[in-house]
Image (cartoon, rainbow, N blue to C red; front, side, top):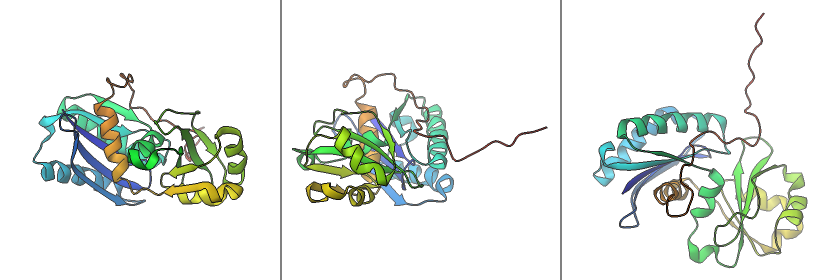
Length: 230
């Protein structure tokens, strides 16, 4: 089973192709960017498919990050993923950016740590969610200001050591204050998240999360307002 994974909801445009049968990444491309996602994504998908010698007809499933993250990135990624799924005639699976961040860690790296996924909002706040080292969620996702992060950690995280992962990992670690001496940081660039998104989507039935909906997941309203007419 070949699964395409897309992540455009964070600080990168990233695409990966995963073979569930061989448990191997067939191809991956990632580029850190804040603009031009709509122009970059489709050619990147075509390149990844070509790198692996595959086409849309070979896809069994598509996974896409649904947030929390940037509004524009979510909109671009979800619209493209729906079009790809229609073209391939395959199911579309939603994966949160927070899940993708921790699932992208090497098992040997995450052992003995409490994990904290930290995703940029492109504003002052951070999107956070804690996980155990077996990737089980320890709490719900949260929208936290850096000034409140130490209090959040004291209330929601077990004792250190703590491993923070995601595109906001360094910023989260800097805001933790007294925890700083017990914190490891893994900043991500999109490739690991795209692979993790594909892997989660490919194995959704096996891990009991079937029927995931690929709809946007926001922790706060988008930075968009509609003008009033009349």
